[in-house]
Image (cartoon, rainbow, N blue to C red; front, side, top):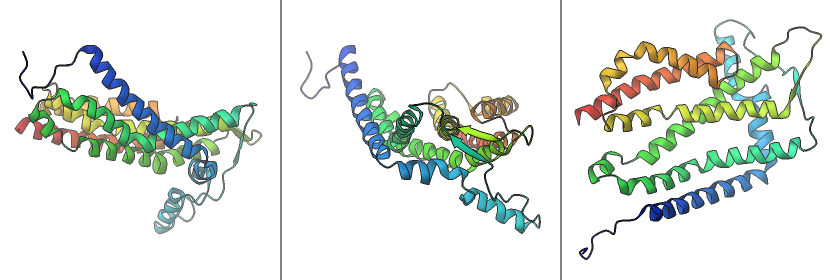
Length: 266
């Protein structure tokens, strides 16, 4: 017989019911943000997604300034984008509008979605584990947003510039499909948001004793190869974008080693 104040053990179905409500609240948050993005297409498309094809985009202006500061003239200055966007499907623009709004809604609502997920996981942890995992929602959300911003301001514009300017012949004009352009930008941003979670993953794996600092140092060269493979997968097929993604991944890997060391010392 349970004592007064003792927590009631939940059955598997009870856990599923609790999880269901966490997922429902997360879906509501994503949908709400999605609706806001959907009813503001000028901001979503003209100001955010299509900004990467504007010569006045901050990344292009920064590269131009660096080029002039190094005495290279306008080598890295992009004055125009030699391609146009087109839609070839009857429902293409509408479906693109919905999908883009959904991606934007997920990105904006990510901190809340992860908070709901953490609320479901947290009761299963011991008190000491909960103490060590304090702040995980903040750090996970921060790294995700940082990754998305890195993808948006660094990788996406370079990919757009390279692929938009690439020509096998002057006789072939680049007319980029709307869905192809948006897919490139959104995939790069989301992929970088996910891979920036490496320190968080290492933190929990170290707490569980699955990996150690020695393991991470021993396989550093293998990690370099893996980083290059991941960079090639999540970026368009241009060397510059792959290098841009590889650098922060290697930095995050070194940070992860330090995190694993701290977990081992505790």
